[in-house]
Length: 214
Length: 203
Image (tube, rainbow over all chains, first blue to last red; front, side, top):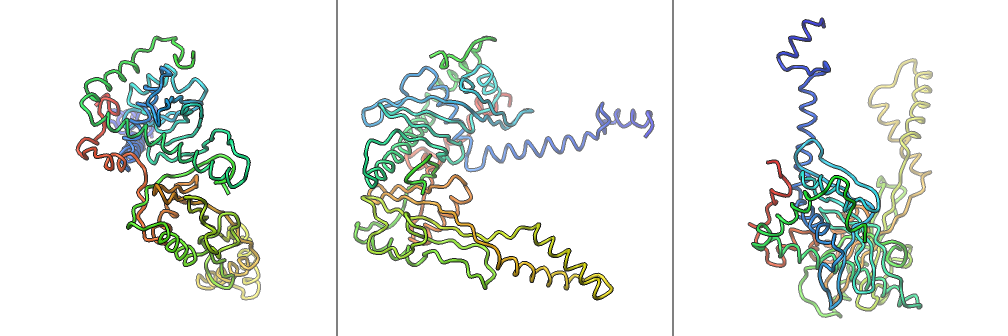
């Protein structure tokens, strides 16, 4: 195609400045957005994303998020978070690094609508510390690490492991129930969401992650 | 046996079933496990995959004698999955060898039906030489709290086991995912829509 032909196609909006067909790019972008939307809605995955995002915000201070069986539960996101969005040019972003989950960059991305889809959490219940990766859609526990076992006999160790596994599940369940009750209350829209948005936006350019400072 | 050692990966469910006392449950479990016990792949047949229940501590054992699957308040058993994987590259290489021999003998290329028949024969020959791979995925079921865990890192396997548990024991497994937990604690369906300020700030 001659230069004049290219210019005419460009004028008509059929090709971009790079000479590539605009329609192809649009189709790929639309397909990507459709997929992001499907992942967002499938099994109401957005509920799990809002849960993990709320938990990230709620855990930043290092204070207990709730009490379970009379012992405090504290949460710390570690190592890696996967953020997913439903609109905009970026539909997924992975941030790695011990300080990454609470970093200013991650908070800015959350302000743009990219919510936590996967994260690795350290959950401390009283004196027992657990670690597990959770995903927003199924809240499956992956690569979980249990506290050290106290028993020596093999049968007892099996039952202790099962007990600790159930405790890990109970902690996740209790945090989720706390979030869902809060989300269904008037406080969610009037106080919690504005506070979360303020936290996401209140990021000086060179601010380190507060939680990471201790 | 991931229940006993190593890192833990599992999906969580609540068991919904008709009310039974512990003795009844033991009978139901025993009958179900024996009824759908693992059976090895029939090497003379066509199947390339076989799944069934086996004992937790030895996946070669499927007798479920007495109460061998009961550990305190838990029922523990494993889903044994055997698979024959015939490498596509080996089928392709054998097919190429067969095609050359066919053309030399018949002075023409093989037709579609001849190719299909040859491929089926080659697969059957290779199948007889292939050793099945075995994987096990544990299930822990707390009979007192009605909580069940499927110990699998893969969602596809968790779904397969969910169906197997439901069919074997005639129960319903409710996954402990956010929308179903919301329903269980009485959060109204109408309040479960997305929060636009979080998910779609630019909308």
